[in-house]
Image 1 (tube, rainbow, N blue to C red):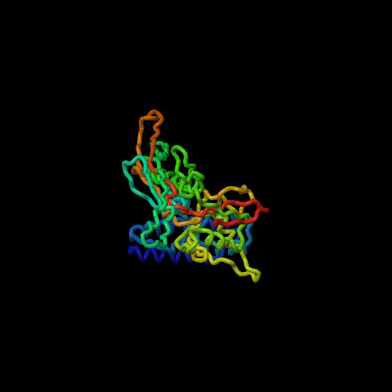
Image 2 (cartoon, one colour; image 1 turned 45 degrees about the vertical axis):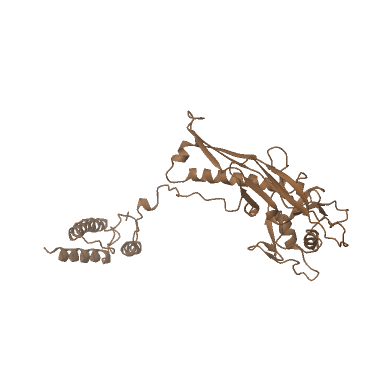
Length: 384
């Protein structure tokens, strides 16, 4: 017999069974119908396999139900449900998915190092030990000279400073499993972390280096020779005149210096942003992309104490203002990173150590104006 014709006969018989009414007490007849349905559907499945047909509208098998005690209406409703209902089969691999591991590590979403490190003047002195620097304090004044009289002396005044070598180090341990995992670049992340940690320490030393053995001479250090003649500006709180006070207090008497930069804590930047006029307008225009306050560049550094913070003690340095090229960081060696599996060989630990020899000091005479927190009752003063 033709397979397609036999399949049509089976479909017709199945439809006939579903539309036929069955007396609620005629259990034997209903059971016979269900048995015939099962047999017909098995035959139909075999035909479809032979014909290689994947029919999406396949009629699902009738469910064997308990019919005792069911009324005619209930049996008809049950038959209608069986006829119209469809069962959706969800494959197990669509529910129980295997565990997956991403092939990358999410980095810290925020900057961990102040951009101050990249904006100061870096000098390459590979192989050096110390760095001596001279700077001009002032130039002389010419004089009016009578005939035959001695010329007026105009020798400039110089200052001298020495930048000594400072050793900055970092050490990290990881397990050999982390290094050998193919899916995640843990080793690359460890090396990135070492570089970041070195830069964080340099950023801290540029501002707060004590100027003693194996330390930078920071901008806030009293050991900064180039700033020995400068008088810090003392401010008790950030007001609508604070920015002008800082700008006009910096530099010489002949000009308002351009190209200078504010170095401050993020909370102090927020204090500038919150200032309002009597009409409610913002006092300052702050460009967070270009990083300027009324056109004046700023650099955020967490090593600055916040002048606007009530916990900051009077007398502490909080803000610096000046040209960042007035601070030099000589690099006496490249960053050297060593790897060893010997130290904790038994434990399967891989050790990384890194070191760089560098240093830093203020090299411009009065190159930075330093702002101190003043006592609340103290009168604010500015430099001459």
